[in-house]
Length: 544
Ligand code: GAP
Image (cartoon, rainbow, N blue to C red; front, side, top):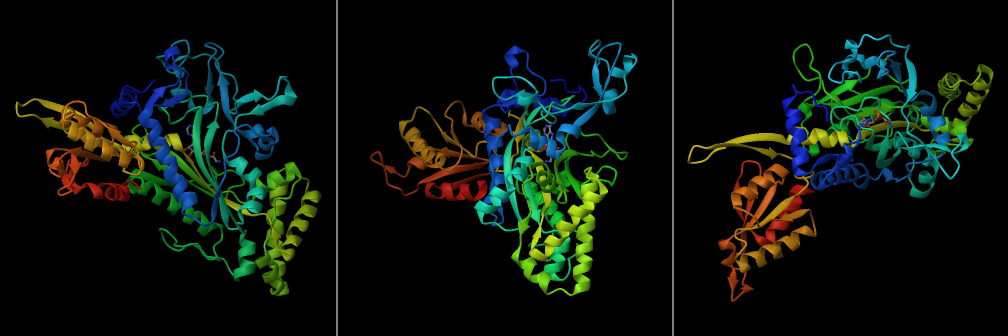
């Protein structure tokens, strides 16, 4: 784990994660494997809650998104169509002296294998010209290992969504605009995995492909395309939204999501990629950055932030590529367009036809189709408008689970120093996770473990709560120690069963007069008396 010595906060976070069972180095007993990380008991719960929150927000609470869970290994043709086989690479240079291989754009930050503590620039060996190094992990399918059995571990989850677009459309009863969401593992043979889990070789993504009508279709149906006005969330989706408003909508929705799980807006940066940075098919891409402790600083000393998520307006590039490579039509039929088209006057039809034709021709030519063929195919595509046919465009919010976990831990990390009556000071850690993502939602603590009535009541409360949320039972050590342990795990609530609780007991049976427990809040340490019957609803309201 090569963290820079200067970054004290990162060092503390890495050490806490190991000590409390959030994150371990993969294969640690064998010396580890660079770029791979395991999640321990608390990390696994945190990750699960983050993915559940995303799925709930992006799929369950929406009428216009359906879910998918596809395989990691898919037909290698998918990666030819997507462009990953040809272009998913980093420029690499080799050093002829130390034989090291480095990313051409990062030579000042990479250790030289001969002198690992030094940077490559200190090795003045002659370097080769940059060469492309493909980042996909390769494997073989079946018993024969030759060119015909080569397959890849997916470098993103998105392509399966495009490949299954037609199946989902037909089986989910969705119509454009609608989205398909997927959470799953992705693999990239990163040349320089670094910054703890931030750049890993195996990681998880949460991706949505949201399919929309091309602007020409919106205009044909609605008579015009609404343009974004002012800052902020544009409100509920409207039929006259084109790609710009849908893109803005998803940027704002995603920022709301982060706020809803405890990352305040001022920890995030909305970065609009410049024209030079944009992929050739993308119309706009906004990266949502989080100000990680290891982020570089700008000239004012402010953290610049590192990418958590990218939200790209990808035109109809992906579906078009799969249509060309698979030979299967990826277009949709839209009855509203067919009807609207008939009612347009000739001049409007011609104008929209021409714009759609130009866009399709441009895509085909950029994809290597010769000009004559591109013109013929684009004509066919534009003629389809009159029949209600088109290839949907897509807006893609694509987030990394592991980067979000790291951001949440970094953001939650805080320390308090307390001094006891004897004047002894102790600094301890509190992880201030939002209750929605906290690994443990509630700890149930009998005040004393040798009082059977307290233990029985505590077990009863615990068994009720654990059915609904991740609850933890702890009867070891002083109550103060137990609270501190839960603070360090980021548990937002503790329920303590004490003697006042027992006042509700009569002849060993629950008589229910007082029936209260202490509900202790992690943040601020506030304690309140709550009826046992109210504990579950009170907690559910905060953790959901
Ligand atoms: N389908 C689009 C796509 O994959 P990307 O920007 O390459 O876009 C999306 O990846 C997100 O996946 C990133 O914003 C990041 O959160 C996460 N991610 C990408 N590479 C990663 C890596 N090596 N380690 C951890 N997370 C990564």
